[in-house]
Length: 188
Image 1 (cartoon, rainbow, N blue to C red):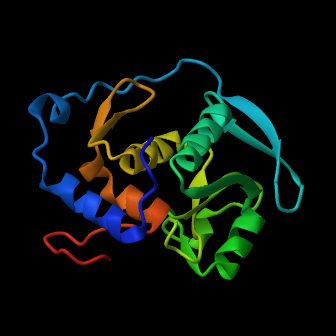
Image 2: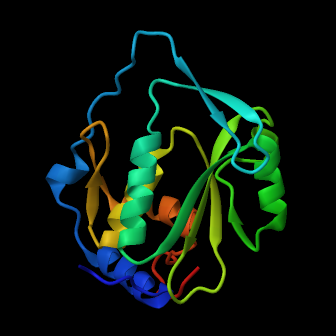
């Protein structure tokens, strides 16, 4: 089994991936977007911080897949956790976190009644967790992070589309705090 890498080794791995040429079959393998002709399902959950009941809408619940990915990240030797939180707790987490990334354009995009994921990540060399808030349907972000941590140059999403890790640098930076500047060898 591959051992977990420290922050510097992960940055080096990202640089090596950046130096690879993307195969044409991968770059051109984007299919059409399909829409499901049905009502969006509602799912009930509880905020794991304040224990408030929450309801969110999605075409399907990927919670088992999310937790499976977190388990794989842990099995690789990284410290990671995933919690379901409400918008109020998301805003509180943002205030308390030393490292925090929010994918939304502003705090106004967080609705107190909605459910979100709080993803915490730490390499063996980090002393603090990097935290990111994602929406409940962001499985794709977690698939990208897992593929990167495994050292893979691409991953297949749940719609059988292939994505280059280098096309997901912003996602990896937002989710883990690890990134490289374009045309530069220094960490962001």
